[in-house]
Length: 181
Image 1 (cartoon, rainbow, N blue to C red):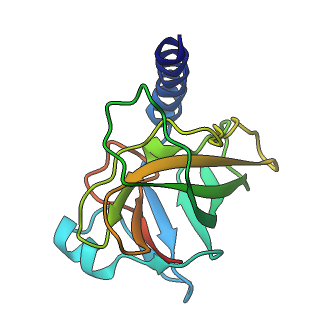
Image 2: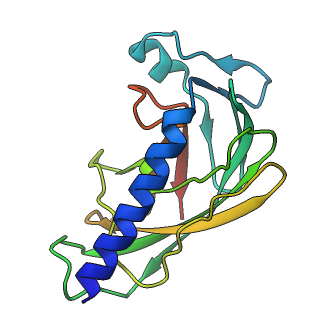
């Protein structure tokens, strides 16, 4: 029953994200100095110049459809484990984030589909079906929402890198968060 609920929730989230990204086009993540990272740069050059943010810092994402803000607000470990999950998890971390639709023309939704999360050993982490997660809602211009995603962490270090993608079909991230707790 739990797997069926999770599969249904994932399917709904994927459908919403597909619609969101089908309408969205290229984006620029604004750095704290006011510069922008253009989508036309090569992947290697983009990685070297990728704006990096920390916990609680606001990222302004600018696209041809408008602008929005994203912020990672908290990272915490949970002892919750899902007995039905096939994912190995020595540790499970909950990543809380919030986002605001500043001027984006369409409804905005941010989720784990917009992020790639890596541990200190550069392993790509898998999402984990833990309690305490929350899917962010789709919000119109001037509105805010938040979400909480869980990830299986099999490294002892309290360190994560999150690559944020405005469009999950882009080959390079718009910015990166480095989180230590």
